[in-house]
Image (cartoon, rainbow, N blue to C red):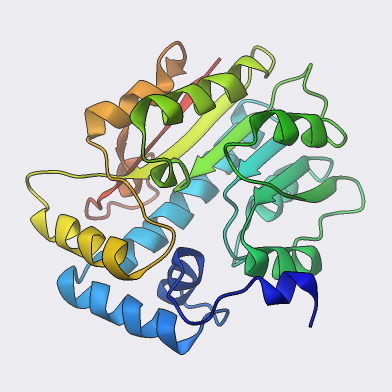
Length: 260
């Protein structure tokens, strides 16, 4: 058994593996499927949130590569590889695009090195680091990305794991401050909303039984991550409502894209 494999805890459900289960992946364990089914009982639409978040990622990356000319992507909180990962979408538009993935989950690490292989013209790399390790992330990412040129910072469903509001805002500000003008922030986050009480019940169940624990925030609190940036239309909205190709119901994952 490798050191990486020894870090994988299959006795407790894990968010990356449950997300993988909800999106139809196979990189999960019975404990994850059991928890995922229980959460889905509490909130039947939860699987749609995972899919909506993934589709939001694809639309945002495609827009940035096609319309904004972005050729560098720093994707923190990668999660388990699935269809249309950041590098696949970006390099489909621009084969020379460079992508650095960052995650600290050992199972993600085990799969990422095998699956996240980019085009010959571009480059794809993977860092084993925590979101809070800003200096390490920037130093290591700069070996692949030119931080003096625009970068798309991808933070999908990851700042939810930083419980303290001010700490989470500070992390995002530090990352964006290190990036060149013309860089973009793409962020999604689970919301708490009076119209969606079953979401709160599902999150409470997760925080009691799963790992790592997550924090919900209001749409207004999520919009604060974009302070100082030019927030692109339609603003911070349900992920399913961010420039959809076809109309879809709102989900309790909100997201937005901002330009530095």
